Structure formats: C-alpha cells, structure tokens
Length: 288
Image 1 (cartoon, one colour):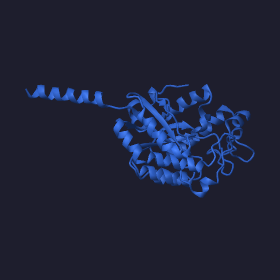
Image 2: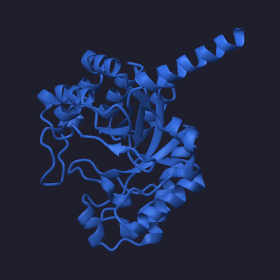
Image 3: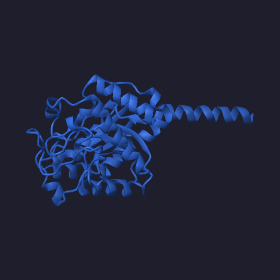
C-alpha cells in the first residue's frame, strides 16, 4: 500500500512539473568590465539575487574591479566577451596579447578598429585572431573566476564560418560553452527601445513568451555616471545618450514589475553554468 502511495505521489509531482513548468530564460549582460559605471550597475543587479550571465570584456581597464565584484556573488555565471573592436571615440582598448603580436588586428595607435568594416578592410590574419582570442580566454582563467561560456562583442569573432569553427575549437579545448550555440532562441532586444518605455517593453515581452523553449535576452546595463555620458559610439547608427539607455535597462531588470511577471509566467531563469554542466561543450552546435 505504501509503495503504491509513493508511486502515485511520484507521478503527481511529475505531472505538476509538466503542467506548470514555464519557459526558460537566459539573461545575459554584455560589456562587464568596460567601465566603472557598467560595473556599478552589474553589482546593483547582482544584489537583487537574480541569476544572471555576465559577459566580461577582458581587454578593458576596469576588469579588475569587475572581477572583485563577481567573486562575492554566487548568482552569476561568467563568460568571456571576445573583443576584436573598440567602438567608442573617447575610450579605446587594444589586444591582450599586445599590438606587436597581432599587428593586423590594430590601427596605427595599437587599438582595435572601431567597426567590423574597418577590421575586415585591414585583412586580419586568422592566426593572429586565434592568438588574441586565446589570450583573452587565458586572462579570464587567470583571474580565478569560474568561466562557463564565451560570446562575441559586436559579432566580429563569429562573423565568418572560419571564425565560428575557431570558436567551437576553443570551446572544446577550454571546456566552456558558447552563447547561442546551445539552441537558445534569440529574443526581442530592448537595446534600441526608448529609455522611457524599456521596462514596459521588457514586461510585455515576458508576458508573451511561449510556454516552452529556451530564450536568450541580451542586455547592456550601466549607470549614468559622467564617464558613461562622455562616451560616443563611432557608428553613425549608434544610440545617442547611451548612458540613459543602459540605466533604463538596469532599472527594467531590477523593477518589481519584471520580478512579478517572471513569477506569474513561471519563467525558469537559466544560466550558462547550468547548461555547461548539463550539456558540456560536446553538445554545442553552430547556429549560423
């Protein structure tokens, strides 16, 4: 009799999971370590306890602060935001491996090119790209942080089939995942949405998520500190007043309305730590 009761309870639990499970959502925040204002926002979001994925720009000057922040939290999965561009007019960075090691990747000042078009016009050498991407991953690992995945700043490091194969090779070698290579469905971004309605746009999107599937949302958070206000995107289509946009994305993610709709929709927040443990690098598939 007891055995039958246990079996019945087991199936009740299984059916409950099936009937009431909601969609999976991966929250990824890019450009961590780029500046103090981005790091301040990253800490504020971590303080809410929300499980997040932080993609870190290891060539940038504010990485040491970001590392110390992230070491204090267990609700963050950490990725390498592979960088081959430096897009701001007033603030530049160059390769971790040094300009002399990868001369085809840098301008005359030793900085990465601001756009993908200029990067490609300089005929970058494949072996130098591999050298630099390895250097960034190695720097990440040397911090002592647990690295779960990697992705690509401005899409440059995944812009050709050859580069994509390189990413797969590096992921398997370093035993980490790649964002978008686990079958995640790209979700609507609020990147270009007016700052005044970013929160409403995010809440509306979550409300309309299908009941099944794994969805990726990419955010760019920051605080409206003077350093962020001073930065201008080189791209002619770059957003104006980027500091306001980043502040609004932070406010959307930390809002009570966002938390409420996640709970109501029964959204399961997923991290790349979880995906790496579940699937490993062996199950990565090129989505391009």
